[in-house]
Image (cartoon, rainbow, N blue to C red):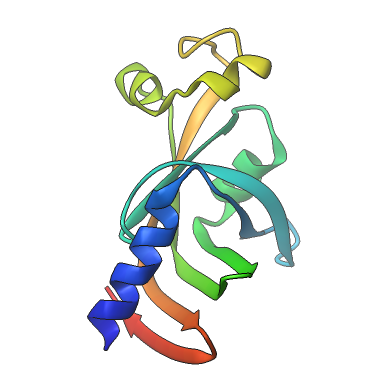
Length: 138
């Protein structure tokens, strides 16, 4: 059952570029959430996001790299909660690989110095589909 739910979650995430909620600890140790769009992913194993290098998320990650990601929908009904670690990537090759056209509204291109990639690596998950829940570790 765990593998079928992991597959369902992977299919949801891979279906299209989705918005989700990223939870990080702020500099005072309190949880904060930010909406963010998934750039690319490999199932639920890892997800990437594109953001501003000079933004608050970066300061929070530098302070504590523990994070959580949540995707949810009422129709169809699902809740995908992932917990893991997140890293900041400024490597030009990775930035170019993760670039997508919608980012042009915020950055001059993949070589923009204020553009960076966040890579979230899942350690554990809580998946809910149609009121049936599965928890596990990767």
